[in-house]
Length: 495
Image (cartoon, one colour):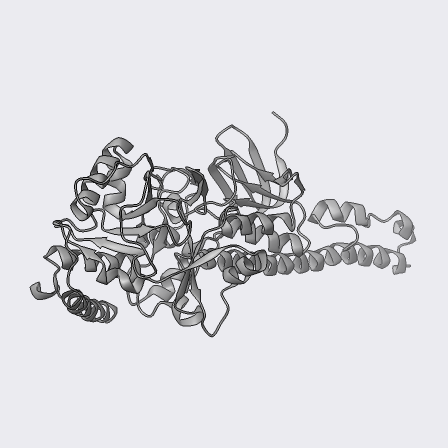
């Protein structure tokens, strides 16, 4: 095997954070960087897959936080690139709730149930934020199918974070579905093109290595080495670890020495959210459609059982595609069973809502984020605790020369694409600052190395009382620039 390759910075993971971090480093003069990506593509949890001619977004599909006092950077990029998007209005979903007999729950009943659920959720959040540990009252626990359906959309969609949600406060409350043939990932490829070489629309730069599964990270104060699954070793001065919190909680990567306790405990405290969008293709449309019918709910006596449905007509007219979203335990259950069984369950639910004579789906697409060892989740969620600021600090704080990035390191926007985007920028800026400090320290040390031998030589020259020890200054062992550049690792130009 060849000698290990050496880079200034290795970036593990070519998702949004990894690509953004690499771009900032390259723009600031760090040319000898290396990106190691475990899969055969960039994008991470942004992933497009063709489904019956439809560009199905298996992972992140919305740009959340638009129309507020500040501009969402991902929305800005989408607009600049002309990505096609569609406004999503979830507010009508609560008025399109079907029971198991196919009847729509009256709007008045739905509105009352929703208000009670919101009031109960807000009170529960306040109690938890204040450190209260009293169990919820039996009156506030959802029991009926409609209460379970509303509880599901409220907590798994609308209030998955501690209120207030910074994304909507800072960037705005509107959300837009990306519905572009090029996919949501297109904006990431355009970012990569700014600093990586491309050929015929594909990245051909050797600084991006695909199918490189990092299994070991050896770290010291003097540098980092990485061992990949195929047996290669890569060395660097610094490393940015831009993998999901699910991967960090798994045993995919071994650290030597192990991460300190404060870091490992912080990693374990974060919640893993699994979010599964199942795509179903039909020969024709049999469900209601229109601006206020895009989203509808199924009220079942099991929470989250094929509850949240979306008609893709608004995004892709005449596509005849429905998407049903599962989360967490339901996601894990469905991932573990054959797609044929999932299709059977989904069709039973649809026949409850729309009658026994509806046609069978002609195709199904089931993403598997939980069983993907390079992801192990869809996004992170911070627990409701009083010291989340300290937890976030520990999550993103570097260990030796390992820097951490990803949506889970974003203090305000974890769980969102713009959170990953901003985290990559923040991490690279922090690393650049530390690199500059180290260069200045080494430069100071190199000047000391140069001056001390020179002083020793001049002392000998001026000591006339011992002429037998006098030597020519030109023969003194004064380090040259070339020697210094090897000794302290700095370019001769800087010295």
